[in-house]
Length: 128
Image 1 (spheres, rainbow, N blue to C red):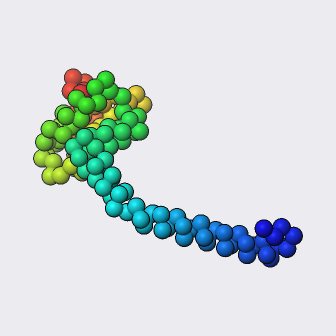
Image 2 (tube, one colour; image 1 turned 135 degrees about the vertical axis):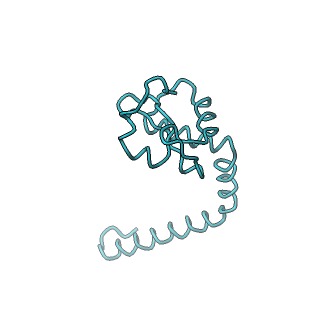
């Protein structure tokens, strides 16, 4: 490597970085099918979906004794606990929890999860 000449050194690193990027691209392109297959196995199976949802809850600070049991309740819930609207798809459903303590409160629709008015109606006995 030419250490003395600054221009030669810049050209050397420019070429080195270009070669590294090209080699990485070739390696990634050769593994696309393998990566796609692994992603399908990981996320698009019932077990993979459950792990992904539970890890998201844990990352958000949800605290619960039995996450798998909570997941089963979450998946089987068909209506919002506050407004009783039916969930149309899985993105309508939210697991509400206290951000201070991490304790799970209810399973809500997106609209009720965004509003705080329902908290005045909260019955302390309906905690999950």
